[in-house]
Length: 143
Image (cartoon, rainbow, N blue to C red; front, side):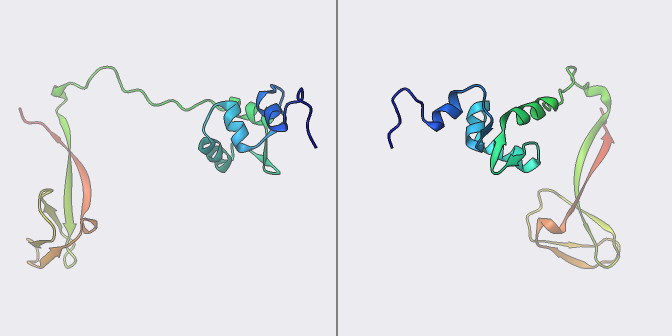
């Protein structure tokens, strides 16, 4: 069956007509000028509800406008002064299996590394970075 030339196809009427009822995820993405992947993320997050696989446009538009967009936290305009006196140091350490002492490991040490526990004298071979723990320590600067 041929459609008359004047009548738009069903797909065209979905995209161009401003009063839409239901759209597919791809159609809604075109309507909102966002990616299909973003629509899928919103569906998965529960912010868009599907009804028989379609999106109710008016209901979804209203629900998305209710929640404000997240804004990135702005960094303070003033730079922290170098005289603040504190800096952070990331330390790598290994916890001895025998005595549970913490053994500091130099970040430049190539693995596998053979180290010995200063507390109990046990010889330890560190094979992987996953065996090491990290912590951040704040120290005061010495000028």
